[in-house]
Image (cartoon, rainbow, N blue to C red; front, side):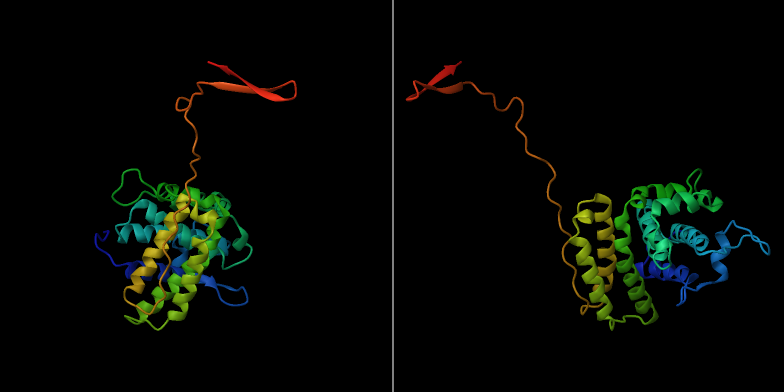
Length: 262
């Protein structure tokens, strides 16, 4: 049952738990735990419903994030989709060649083909996890998403350290790294001028400031810049109508004469 009143610390704790189900352990070696195979509709010679490859684990993982956060937290669908997409991009960036894979390509090749992706959500007649992602599908198609990967990774780290020791404010160095990365995003016109990306900036800012409220020694974030207006002032067709039109021309190469047309 969803929590109507939840802590952001609990939410990040759950994301960190799922994050630990698989990953890359030095030397590009993939490790996995049993839980990650829950949403793997793949078979090999020896077993069914098992993920052999990193991209299969990432597919299962993003469904894990969607299901967990939907069932346990009272999140709006667009916010839930943002967390799932942020996590997926961060996870793909951990291993080549998926670190160079566009999210839209990964989405259409692997996630859409996973049968669990079309599971009906609890207490919903027709809503599926695909419907949730589709609320933010525009984030899948643009390369700038990878720029959010490192600051999101730092946030996961900060929340993980804070949860292990309540009120842990000893990681101001990591907080500074996050603030520096956030400022880069804030100054990037490709991000700041995009409405969907600006929402992600606010998401990261809100989650970081939740930690900063408990840790005054953490570096402050700059205000999110307001993009300049893209409206180009134009004269209305009816606002300015010339009443007189003057045409000047030379007469006898000595004087100018103006003819006025009404």
